[in-house]
Length: 119
View 1: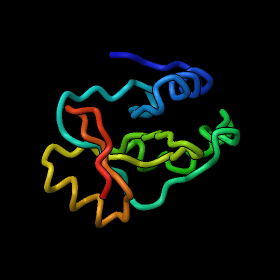
View 2: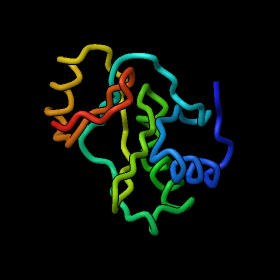
View 3: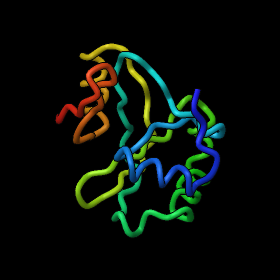
């Protein structure tokens, strides 16, 4: 069980690994061996330069109700942007695809194979 203790640690980890999925409020890294991470519609998109401790803190505060009721905090990097999402872990492939499409997601994450699946 790994925990990231500060917002600066979370950002540093994301810079190194291109993202992370966390349990809030413990900041424990969600460590599943199988299944899929799928986010719900909404979230926040910022540039790499805009991704600061303040942005992260505000997102967590704004979404504290859902984060304290089963959702995970997903942070994902691409070439130009950082995505802050409310994420669910889903075991089945078909269910994950359906949930992702229903929530207008551009991709889901395959935990076992550690790869992004574009929808």
